[in-house]
Every structure is written in structure tokens, then in C-alpha cells.
Length: 274
Image 1 (cartoon, rainbow, N blue to C red):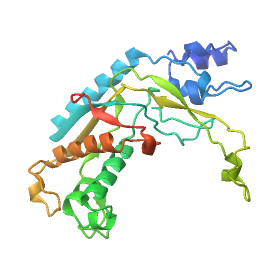
Image 2 (cartoon, helix red, strand yellow):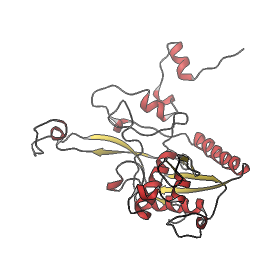
Image 3 (tube, rainbow, N blue to C red):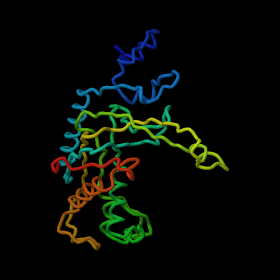
Image 4 (cartoon, rainbow, N blue to C red):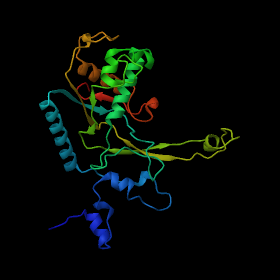
């Protein structure tokens, strides 16, 4: 019987030096193999994503899409492209001061399905229900899509019928270093300090996903229905899945996704529109 181990594990077992260039998973390189020398930061990290692995990932996404369709789900997939920069998982735990959401197997940056669901849910609450979650939970369509607690339209806790898949890059991601430059750090972390100009700015570097990177978004539902079949404030002749997709498009374009959206990060547009 033969046993196989990853190359880096074999190197450790046989006390061989591991060349950092051999690591082809960016998640491992960033979080499990950090550099240690004076003044090192994420701005010093260089990495080129493996296009072959990306192709395998995209092929797998198509297989998942077909698998759901074969099980009588309505599935819609669409590509959206970043215009500007995007930051996903800035506050994640990291050996550095800032983090990034990376797939633990493939190492690519991705957008968790829960994040997409949360962004669209918030957008609909703000636009349709005048920023009132309480009002939204009285709406049958809203509870049908996103799920609901006991105190809601269905009078019981329910799961949302819409499935929001993780969004993965469909083109080779490009990472870019950005900078936060807080000028009044003592004011934010110590008592009895004032935001005065004699404090030195302390730059904090963080990674962003750069302009024009495309992501593959996918949603699915079993037993898609017309909006008009629900007791809802929404007036539309769309089906539920088309309604959700349109609101994904609006939310990404108008509000963005990820961190620092209030200053313009995370805006994404339908690739066919550009």
C-alpha cells in the first residue's frame, strides 16, 4: 500500500527547506506561512494564482448547477465584475492586522453565500419596507425568500426557500495592497486623549481584490412561483428567483458588498451591462 503526503509535509518530515514559491495555495501562504522580519506587512506579499486550479473550480460550479437542475431546482447564474476595489473579510482573524476571506481548499478569495444573502436582505428591507425589519417580517414573500423567526408572517420559525451559493472568481483574481492611515490612534484606544495634529499617522496595509475581477453568482429555488401568488407589498409579474436576482444586481451596484462600502468599495456590476 502506498501513502501520499503533500510536498510541504514531506519536506518537514525529511527536514528539507520549503521554498515559499512552491506553495500554490494563497490561503496557506498568507495565514499559515507568515514572514517574520522587521517592518514586514501584507504589502510585501507577492502571489500569482494558479489558473489551472481556477478552471477546475469553475468546472465544478457548472457541475453543481446541472446537478441542482436535475433535481428540479430552478437555477440562475450570472457574472458580476468589480468596478474599483473590493474587501471581503477585512476583520477576519489573521497573523497580520487585517484579514481576507479565502477558500480553505482552493485558496482563492470568494464571497460567502451568507454575505450575499445578508446584503440583498438588507437592501430589500431598506427599499421596500422603509428600513423596518419588523414590517418586512409581516410580508409573506420576504419570509418565503429569507426565512423568518416565530414572530413573523408564518407565526413560526421557517427556513428561507432561496439558496444563495458562495460566489467564486470566474477570472483570475488580482490582489492589490491598500492602506488605512489613522491619524489619531491614541484618541481611539485610550481614555482622556484628544484628536490633535501632533500624533503620528500609523499606516495599516490591507489586501483588496482589484478592479475588473469577475465573480460567478448563483441562486436556486425549488418550486419557483410568481410574485403575485404571495401576500406582499411587492408589485411585480416576475418569478421569485428573477426578483431575487434583480435585487442582487441592484444591491451590488448601489451599496456594494464586503467592508468599506460607505467609501465606495465593493461595487459590482452585471458583466453584460458594461
